Image (cartoon, rainbow, N blue to C red; front, side, top):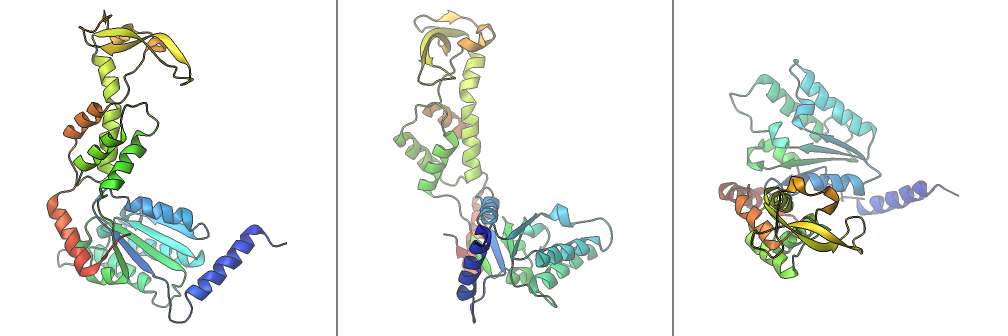
Length: 305
């Protein structure tokens, strides 16, 4: 019997052959552009996971730029040679704008040679580029050199998350942390975070998760409560201590250093915790950059699905 991977390869090869036969050809260059923090790099990682039969190369400008004369273009050439040797392959270039910005009279000879080598390799002059996909990501696509931009045949806009996506992101980042949030709370948070990127929402929740810890550290009084055990949530433990106001019934004057670690019951995450973090965390994307991205999408790109 043939090996399972061999059967998979034969099935994939048959699908690929009929899908891209005749005039049909797969894209050789795809550019992901959009505001920072929208998951362009995560999309590339997802591609690497799904395309498990392909060799994945992930590089950034620091990997390809050298202080030695002629070394940078040599590294670019070697990258594409490796991709050809191990195809089908995917080359992911993060922050491609730092390598392939618009040419000018003030740029160095080294930068000009790197761009020229990229153009030659992406065009496939003198080489077979079938089976090689170049996947680029950038936050500022308008600075790309026009010739490089043309090599990316598909230019896909990755926008800021819409409301339902933001709601799901809050739920995902809170996860199984003990909390008192309701579905209405999540919807309210999604409505309040228009203009926030996925990374911005991650920062909001990470800061909010520290609010119960801050309450413990700043508390001057604690009271005895019954709460689920840390080791077994189904077991209720009595005689635990949690922060409280000085006027609460049963309030005991003490600081958190006086509380035994096995007796501490941290306050659960609440809507007020996230609201406080939200007030202190502003979106990282400004309106001017969004307008430039929308203009680039209108002129050269398309909306991502």
